Length: 273
Length: 233
Image 1 (cartoon, rainbow over the protein chains, first blue to last red):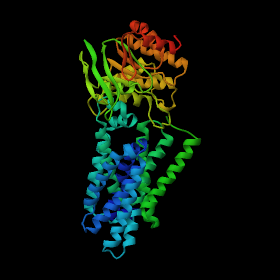
Image 2: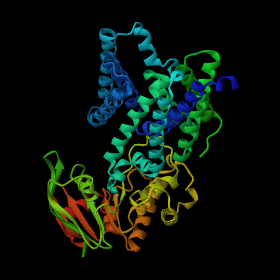
Image 3: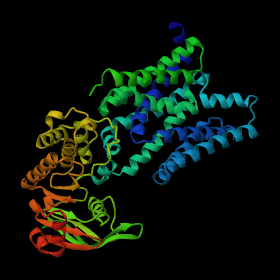
Image 4: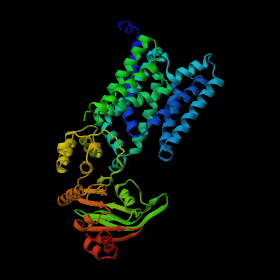
């Protein structure tokens, strides 16, 4: 193990993974409880489409394209969500996937297009090729997201639990919804490097669902899902290094295993109030 | 001095008027029951009072030091397909949402303790909200409303879906709040609070059928019909 840690790229990868998993867990609790899980899924497809645009336009740092486009899509989905519900998510996400792949295959300059597509959809070893500047961007964004959740913990609970009540108290719930949409987009774009576009939802949804099967207060669910998420992500990366498996799917399988175990425990043995 | 005064209100959605010609006022210490059939505009009026929706025309004025968004709101209970993990304490704490500051300050905690005590639910403050009985849930939400505002509470069908015992306890609780001097506005289908507790009544049916004291209401056509339909209890 010490052998792996002697490589800087492994340390960078672990630092990034730790922060991303913390952010996605915090976000996941809010999204799952608001029945917005599918929005996260739809946005990850949009992020893939946006990345294809960035690659075709040969932008050196594709995040400059994916970030604004995904945030825009998040805001649009949220606006449409009130009226059209899940169908708008379906329309936007499949369109983004199709357009993205089409752009890459028609205008792509890479010799190995299907390999590139596969790695951006399922995550590849890219997490191990992070540069120091990538890691700093990741740290900055994640720190902002975590700060937001810590500062607005009480307000987020109130808005998530009962939006009408919050509005009756004079809280601008639209603003919170907008903030949540922007944060979702940010987390997805950052996390895409780790697990790939198609698997991000797992990172967001699994820890919250696992925690909810055992714990019954908002605070405990939030803390438990952060711990679950971090443990699974770090374990996934280490296993993938040791067993030479792809990072994204390994992390997701760890999350899935915890989800199954927690659900069985929750149904049979015990729950903490 | 009236706390809330509505003049010539017309309410509705997207240009479609649901109810019009509403004129009434609520004074400090009043117990107002708002009655009417489904679709008569009760909920729309309620949302307007809470500031969630804007009136098409007319105005809502707040006086006597009461500000907009200082009405404690008890929403109607909805279907319990709800698997939200939240403890009673957390739900009541969320009533402090309009108080300044990011964290749970000592004054917020004191307000929560006081209202848990007031509703007689201190002993279940650690329990999971979704596992409570209907009556306990309503007490929790009422404690939350009192954390948000302790002068005026607006209750939307507070006994919907409660069994008879819990219903009586709920009315008893609201009565004691009213005796403490808290102004109560209750949207209801039930004749009991109208007959027993209210001092003013507002009856809506697309327009305003009646507003005035309970005594006058029970002598009016609308009031006789309402009391008659509800079994004349």
